[in-house]
Image 1 (tube, one colour):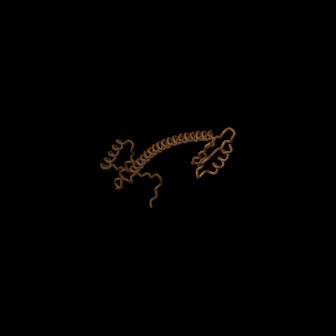
Image 2: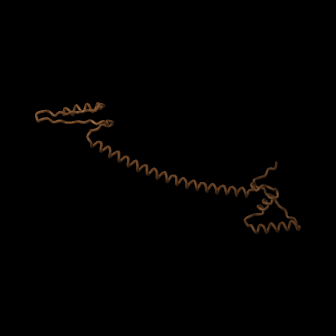
Image 3: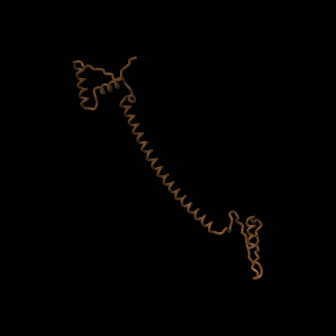
Length: 168
């Protein structure tokens, strides 16, 4: 198998004659029209065409496809960055709203705690049955009598407290 070095230089010889001289003139006029191309580029293009190499394998096409893919990737990255920015802005707003709600709830709990602490211990949590107490006062010589009519399912704590009320 033929091994080439990294850079291979091949020469093209134009013989004195009508065919070679007219080909050389065409090459020179073509290169004048496209100053960015070299004789080497022109020879390579001619070889690609004469050897019937598909367009997709040609270096220029590969570079164009690669360039198009890079452009598409850059466009997708830009769209992704915009999407992330909108998502994070929306989530930051939601977080701010939640923080405000948490602050309001904390304030309401503090106010409720103050209100509960300022009230006398009249009703115990979990006891929703009503206890009616009637105080009957007698004459000035008699003691105060308290009559309670507890409901059927009275909390034991309420029962003990009612004894103190009777003594009072």
